[in-house]
Length: 404
Image 1 (cartoon, rainbow, N blue to C red):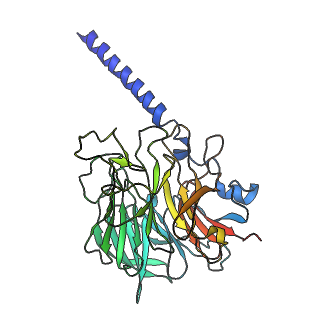
Image 2 (cartoon, one colour; image 1 turned 90 degrees about the vertical axis):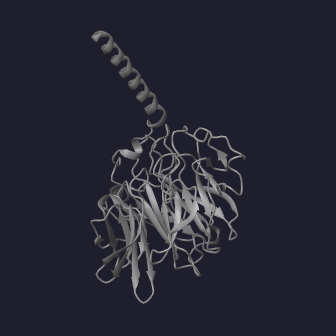
Image 3 (cartoon, rainbow, N blue to C red; image 1 turned 180 degrees about the vertical axis):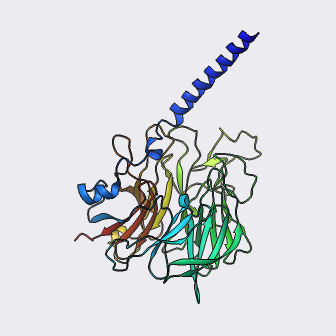
């Protein structure tokens, strides 16, 4: 009997090892670039051995700030100082550049001891208030742009903490609705039916935190949002589910409209039914307008799109006006890694899409190692772009000189 039990345990262990091996081979053999330390210090490469990153003609790149651990969301304070959240360290830092030489003078801690702070937003009237989204709440602070400190914390919104997706991002709607705050909250799982109504949505609340409700649903993990410079519409990236192979489902760019459902967990991409998850018998065909909204643009699966920013007119050649830059953070669960770059999407001023091309590449090296992962993008008038990188621990400054 004892021998039989040992044999049974051995067979179970063998099957477990085989299952783990198959799962790893199908889903995790390309994880190296995402989890390993950077192959090299990109700030030293840029400064001493030439440019590891490839940019279009007319653009240059430098390191604006370094040694920042894992910087994520960026925002400008009222005094023109760049703030960046560092969730892994529980803090927000300011990166003043007082002499405007394109290099941060120092990293000043604005606030610390927070629970994975991510989203940042300012709202200014008589005084400016700083909004910070932690993984389980949104709070307002009095902000001192002279001493670069956030004080007098006042929690205004409770959010569901933890889960598979812990980042929470903030953005105010444009006038005349600029007293409305959007809050992006990702799903708590890879694919499931959520029990918490606040999950897998972009929420909306009054500026004081009251009247919290859903703004748009069916968004698995729309970490970043942006406003179109002409229409004022809300655009957002969204990450598709895992474990459907290398090429499914696509990640997405969506134009977010109030009250719409963008499909997750039963639909993805151009309203394709996820029959692998959703096996219920429907009284209607699933994944159809007006019940579910299709993506505006599909992105290659597992690219992990994060920050997105539109290029303004001032200081930019007309060929770039209203184009969209999107940061592909990069895959962790694709056999051949993808992403690790910034892509330019070409639009006219009516939001009509007519093509895309790589804008910055080189973070992912031919040998499968990575020197960085781009996260957030801030595009400025006058031809400047700031990019955070949570793998290399830096913020880059890209400058554009129009080609005659």
